[in-house]
Length: 161
Figure 1 (cartoon, one colour):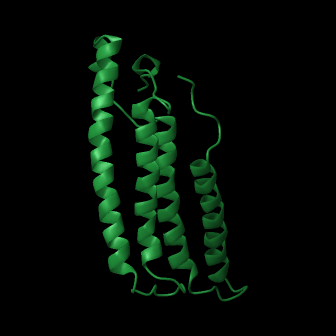
Figure 2: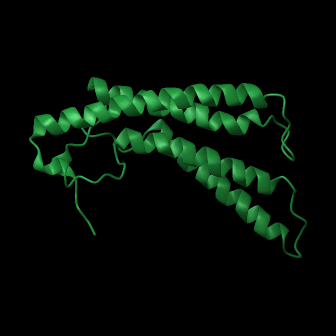
């Protein structure tokens, strides 16, 4: 199976959110100096950008199949067995992710009428990050299970201490 490309929509989105986060944090820092009074919304916006960046970043990790794993037990098994074990783990993981999608959807619905403290949007926008991220993760896991996505061969794993 072909390794993933260098760039993806998830990686680009997480990177852009990181750049925006840096800009807002710099605005916060400058707002605490004698130069000018900083806007009050920067603290909340930074927190929201951080959450969105992290959640979208999770799907980028799934795309490249770069999770941390302990392979010393699985390395002793034959390749077919390793692939079967990782596929079973992916199917169980997919079930958990689908449940998290449901929880995310219910949370968005529950918080839709809550207003953010300083930003002119609903709190549901913040909680939508988990819902959207889990949909993206489910897409990547389904692609990996069906053979359309990247699955690292356990033999490629590097052991570093």
